[in-house]
Length: 296
Image (cartoon, rainbow, N blue to C red; front, side, top):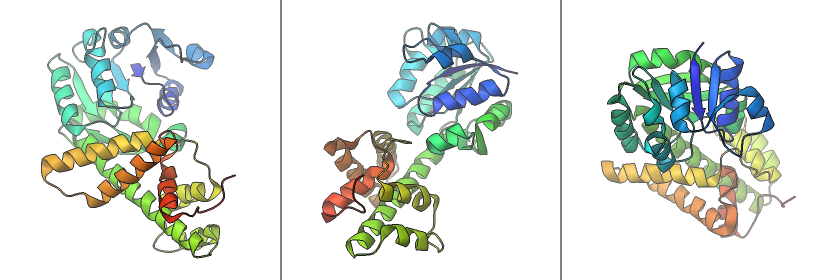
């Protein structure tokens, strides 16, 4: 069993850390006011990220954005100050592929190993230990981490042996998810305004080529008006901005991604940054002056 430091007990991080503990690993987290009584009973607690790293063989990060990862790794009393030669850092956040390469180089210069291993599956996947995990890094580090990944996920892929490959895969994932949410939203707004029952339209579409997990899960959210976040609009905005930034660097046009990013921006400007990303449909409803279904 491994000694693990886990930093980032958010909507997804908390159940992920819990699965590692259930699997028999020792899990240490950073002291925070947000720790619940259950967290304090379940996990060991260290005062700083440096102390977490000093106590662990493997340090896992699950943080919101690139600056958060940089601060936790390299800020005052950060992970880098507590790393030992042979330690393994696994960043499961969704951040910039370019920054990931730089972070990995700095960690490796300290004698530690680094994997970028962003995830897909949202809160439901985290709670059910059914996440898709996309990994960039060496085969040896991946093999070492695989038992930990298997405690948290089901579809685990070493995308490439260069750091940043996992983050690149996650950006591609977020492009597909955003554009599919937009497509489902457009279809349901169209059907509803045309006078069809959107719930029955969704049911019919679930049996054809248009079926998808987005239609199944987020289409239902759009109809039932359940926009409590599994994955927040503001986080998906961040991921699409990463995609557009990388597209500019690579000289790749991403017109659909840009469209979805603008719709998310419209939702955020209207106060919806904290809604589930299925709430993108609200921007489409505003444009159509028609809601898929009445708010409950």
